[in-house]
Structures are given as structure tokens and as C-alpha cells.
Amino acid sequence: MVDTKRRSWGRRRGLYALAALPLAVGLALTGCSGAGSGSGGGSTGGTGGGALSDSEAADLIANATTEFPEKFSGPTEPVAAPDGIKVGVVTCSSILSGCVSPATGVEEAVKSLGWEARVFDGGGSPDTQNSQMLNAISWGANVILNIAIDPNSVQDGLRAADAAGVLVGGGSTGIDSPNPVVEPADGKLGYAFDVGPDYASLGKKAADWIIGDSRGEANIVVYSDKTFPSVLAFQDGLVEGLDGCDGCTQQDIQYFTGDQVAQGLPQQIVSYLRSHTDVNYVFIPYDPAAAAIVPAIQQAGLTNVKLVSVLGSQENLNFVRDGRVQVADAAYDNLYMAYAMLDQTARQLTGAPLADPAGESMPYVVLDESNVPDTGSDWHASFDYASEFEALWKG
Image 1 (cartoon, rainbow, N blue to C red):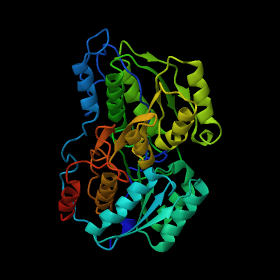
Image 2 (image 1 turned 60 degrees about the horizontal axis):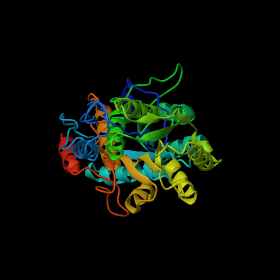
Image 3 (image 1 turned 90 degrees about the horizontal axis):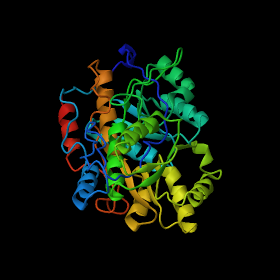
Image 4 (image 1 turned 180 degrees about the horizontal axis):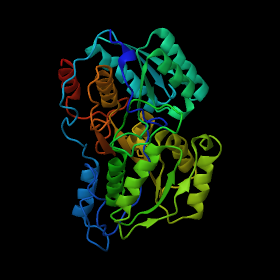
């Protein structure tokens, strides 16, 4: 058993979060100069004016729908994982697939380490999330992994974990590398690491898809949420990509918060689209909101609107598969996230350097009707990363 008291959480990072999200999408172009290369996200270029040719549009869509990376590009340094570790996983809410998929992934991946895992439902509220962190400590967890939970809202849980010598890491919050790093505010605790995809590069892929799908002539409104760093990082990549599209029209970004989704946001978006009849693409920054908006657009009979979102939730992939308003979804591999969180955990517990970037090159892709997974399935990278991680853990 590792003595977790000996560790030093020198890299405690502040996090903000939601259920595994990025943001932004949607635009198009007509002669776009490109979305930029990023780290696997970029546009292949355009004509510099006028609508795209068939081949140019196809190239952009092909780039967007090709997973990145195409082979394992995670850590190369092995780590002798300790024995007898108990991992408590606290979800932001166990009714959101973006929270649940990494948690169930941890339950699967710990078997390779001989560790024990238990999932605690955060219930979608800070009070419950703090309580569940305390429950995880009472259960005997050596490690707590919080999925898409703002560390600023679980300071009680973090202080209790610190006093008990329990390591706390995070996933899907977007404030650790390869994303802009957000340090804890004075006097506050953060996480030892946060594992997430390169949201900005995924945003560029989303821009490529919309530019290609619209043949460079999209008129798009982007909805965003300033609450979450992951959403804003995705937005930066998306807008950077769309700025290269000379023939696209970008409406002013519309901001909302998550608690507005159930308080009239779908109807507000329908009203916006009815008063802006030229808009034919709408971007929603995370799938749970999109799932409420798709039926509203459909019921309003707005057949000229295409919706793009982020996360890869199964309900939204069903929309894409069936051609119901939502046509694409920017997704990342949540099972890979689970393996990467456990890998970083093993490194922290043994005093080894954490892998850099913290996201460990998590795979991502844009899903459309051409590559959406089968009904009931999450998207996973095509290469065998489980064997790669398991080989590293043998030390």
C-alpha cells in the first residue's frame, strides 16, 4: 500500500467544469484560408474566395472526421504502479453520459492494476459532490477522481481529502495542459492533474467540418457558456478556424448558462432562428443542452437549420445517425480518459514526474453520418491503447 501522505501535490491546478465538454462549432466558408493546423485540428486550406469545390469541401470534412492521433501517442516512460489502491470516482451527475462514461471506464481500467474502484453520484450539485467526496474518504479511498466538477465548488471535499492524505485528480475540466492552465485562486485547493483533450484543436476540426459541409457559405450562430474553461478553449479553436472562411457569415456569439437550458433556452433559440432566417448552422457548446434544443427546432419546422454540438453523448449520436437536426458532434474518447487518469495517478503516487501534457494525447474526432458508432456505443479510438497503458504499468 502506498503511503499517500508522502506525496506533494506540487501541481495542484484549479478547475472549473461540467460534464466533459468543449464548445463551439459551426460555420462555413467560401474560399477559406484554413482553420490552422493546431495539434491535429487544422484546415487543409481553401481557394481564397468563392464557394469551395467538391474536392476542397471533401478534404475539409475528411480532416475533421479523421481521428487524432491515429496511433498511441501517450506517455513512453513506464511507471511501477503501487498495489492495493482504492479509487473513488465522483461524477458531476450520473444521469449525464459525459460524466458516467469516464467513471465506468475507470471501473474497467483498474482491473489491469489490481486496484478497486467505486463510483459516487455527484447528483449535479456542489452539496452532493462535496458529500460524495467525504463518502469516498469514509469508504477508504486513497485516490478520488472528480469528473467534470468545478474544484471551486468542492473546497470542503478537497480540504477533507488533503487532511486525510487522499490524492484528488480530475478529468474533463479543460484547465490543464494541453489547454491553458488555470491555477487555484489564493487560499483554494485544486486538483493534482486534470486529464482532457486538446479542446482548441478539436474546435478547429469542428470548424473544418462546418466549412466543408457548407461549401464555404455557412451563416452560423454560435451559442456559448462562459462558465467553463473547456467550452472557452474549444470556442477559441473554433473561431480561429472559422475566421479563415471568407464566404461565411458569423453572427454575434450568444451566451447562456447551464441552468437556463430548462428555463426557456430552446424557445429562445427558436425565436432567434425565426428572426434570423438566413442562419443555417447553429452551434451548441455541449450535448445535454443540444438534446433539449434539437426537439424544439424540429417541432418549429425549421428544416433549413443544421446543429453541431460537442461531447459524443449517445442521445446526440442518435440524432446524427437519424438526421434529426443535429448533423455532427465533436467527440473524444472517455475510456482513454479513464486510462490516462489512472496513469497520472500511478505517477503521482510513486513520485514519478507526471506525464506532459496532462491530457496524455487523448484521441478526438468529429462524428457525422459517415463515422458515427453503432447505436448504444460510445466513440473509441481505433488503436489498442489499453495494451499500451498496461505495458507501461508493469514498470
